[in-house]
Length: 81
Length: 182
Image (cartoon, rainbow over all chains, first blue to last red):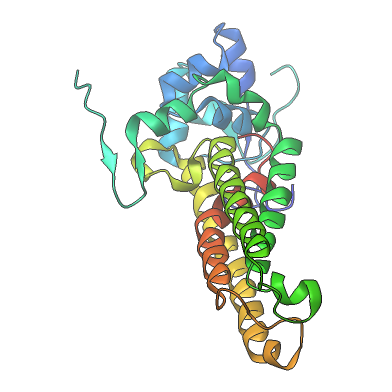
């Protein structure tokens, strides 16, 4: 992507949103409705092409019944975790 | 629940209009949303804007001198100009639809990523319009020395129309070109 939408391309934020969403049986639209964003934004987040604000990270964590620290990390998550 | 359709006068949009574009209610426009089709639309729009601008020069571009002598030639010129302007207007409306109206939507109807994307598009549109205005200034400075770039027939009013269209559509053009998913 020519102009990445990450808040800071030097410090990528990794997440496990997709795994948590699928585990709950939610579609992107379902999660988007719960978090109050457009479903495309959920896609960008899951592909780690966009890093959310703290407020949005908290809303997503709440929608997925998880803590922010369980969903987001500055280091890549280990596969299967 | 209020069913009132809020009008955003400054942005020139309505709440229902924006929400309808942001959701996939209008599935008939889905074909417009692929990046390839959006980019084709941007290129066509740019060519349309150039065509409108050239309306100011067409008489001299054609022969090197003013040719709008006969009624038939004036009629052809006028009908062609009206057709091109309406085509560009149609392109402008399609462009807004292709980017879900994000380029013109108020903050309260967008999420944080969409706001960031829209604002970034306005920044690049500002740079792009800088080049457009620079080009126009050069045309005005150098044009009179060049035989073919002397506004004839309408005193350059099509240049103004094209520039206004460019100002209105540039953020959506940037958005349509850059974004992978919209």
